[in-house]
Amino acid sequence: MLSRALTILLGLLLVFPAQAQVRKGVFPKKGPLKKRQEARRAQMIDRLSNMTPQQRERALDRLPEERRKRVESNLERYNELTPEQKQRIQRSARILENMPPEKQQAVRQVYRRMTALPQERRVEIRREVNRLGRMPAEERQTHLNSDAFKSRFSPEEQGMVQELSNLFPPQ
Image (tube, rainbow, N blue to C red; front, side):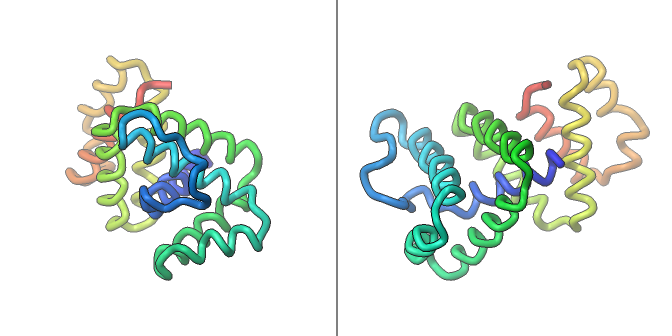
């Protein structure tokens, strides 16, 4: 469930342009540009999910057609989640927002590479990252070096798991 929630979150964050605004003048104006952009994206997800269908329609009309379709699809999936799943997404968004911009970019790059993989492999990678997040640092490193880990994932997938487990702190 967490992996599905994280997928939706990252999907929403990847499709929103930094400049897209639902209403002008309602986003933070101070702080580094990247931080403000991330805050805008998180606020937009929150706003869109809480809008009436008519309000959402007007806001989405401002986006290019292809992006609009992706946003609508992600919002539809988001709205089908339980309140607990939505809380997990919000918690993950806060973690991502609080990362330095270079780490945020690294997370996005890994998830973009993951989109080329079949769905079942993406799910396995996310499960493994979640599992690693629950391990102490020493156990995590031992696991990443194990034959069992190496036999379950291709070298490319191993790299993705390692990158993501290094980017996200243990839980």
